[in-house]
Structures are given as structure tokens and as C-alpha cells.
Image (cartoon, rainbow, N blue to C red):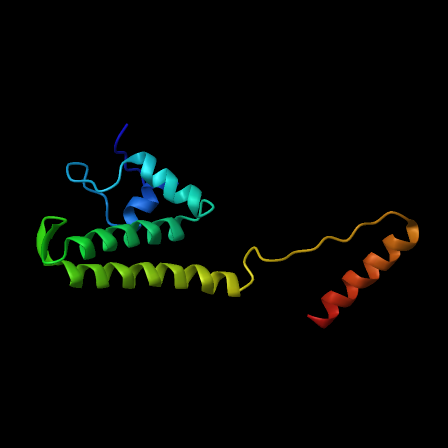
Length: 130
């Protein structure tokens, strides 16, 4: 299956982010989209940024005027715009990481009666401080 587009799936979201939604004139086949996801640990935004970088590289290599999504555009201008969008997606991922999403967590283990009392006391202290 060379092209599929379903925004409820990770591959469809990658296509949406890298503006590859036209089934008659697609830039990446499904295996390439899956490769972008695999390279970027299944992070949709990073995979979309990877796709945009690939499109920007193509536009920069061709140079001059190119047809992109049915429009004639200057290759260098298109490359710069695609790189900017890829950078924005990466910034969003980095910002989410800075907020602590998925970076670190801990668990308290209770093995004895004493550790159970200590855990309950710690939990009570956390609630009163917060």
C-alpha cells in the first residue's frame, strides 16, 4: 500500500504535519512515513519535522523554481519555509520535554509496616505542603 491517510493513526498525523495529504501527488509512501516514525521513537511531531526536512532538502537540491503541492515556488524559499516549520515542530517537542512530560517519575515501595507508616506520613506531608 503506497499511500494511506488517516489522521486517527500516527502515520496520518505525520502526513498532516509534513503536508503530504494529496493521494494523487504524494511525496512519501507509507514505508517512508513509518521509517520517519521509527527513527524518531514514534514521536509524531519529530517524524513530521523529519519529513519536512526531507522535502526542504529536495527543494534546495533542485533549486530554481519547483512545483510543490500544485504551486510553482522558488526552491530556496520553499526550503527555508519547510525548515522553519520543522524547527517549530522540534521546538514544541522540546518545550513539552521541559515541562517534565515523560522525563522522570518515581514510585514508593512498601515492604514492612514501618515503611507503610512512613509512606502514609510522607503522603500526608506532600498534601499539606501543596
